[in-house]
Length: 312
Image (cartoon, rainbow, N blue to C red):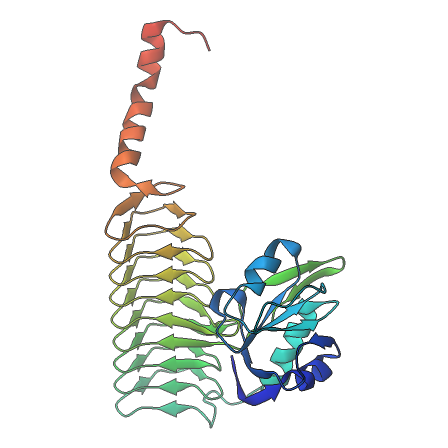
């Protein structure tokens, strides 16, 4: 998330109530979660396992719970609880704004767009031209819809990210201040749910088509002209290329990449990045031809054991 204006490092430290390493007027342009961080951003890290990744990321300010040497050209914010203080940034720069009307006065709806009954459109939502928004759709703040988009009944766009930190007393939610961007000519089937980014955008590329009950996690980027069949579940911070096909009930873990024109067959579980232009199957997903050979081998294994007279 970019700040409305550039802040000084010292002023951010004062806002959070923490010490800092760097010049007081070191510029801060925004804050982002590690997977989508950009130059000028604050990133938080609270576990030694990820210190190196955060310190070597594109971020120029690292909110950290250990006094370490700041890399050249970067600054530190020293906190006893970076997760808590990252949430303070959300609360300060993108606070929750309740709305009491079905269509918020600040929402904009393009010419030729039809909005069905019982649709909820939140604060600042923007909808393009010639769209069809079917009954019971919920478009929460931070959602932007392009032109000629079809959203079938009961979709929810802009829910908070499923992102928690375990505490002794329970779980703390990482607040979400990102957006959902639906590009032109996208179609969403009934009951789809798309979470907003933590600090960046969840994006559905132009011309992509999603079947019923597809779940897209926070900060995921889906390319153009993709096809996702029913009950596909994509975790947060996934990058999916153009022209990718995911068949029914495919599940994808967080933080991986799927290349252009990859095809993942039904009920597969994707646990690592996949190269484009190939077809995959299984859990964990591998190239389909290899998986089919392995399955064929398993079918004849009892006969082989019987022929070898092996006792199990």
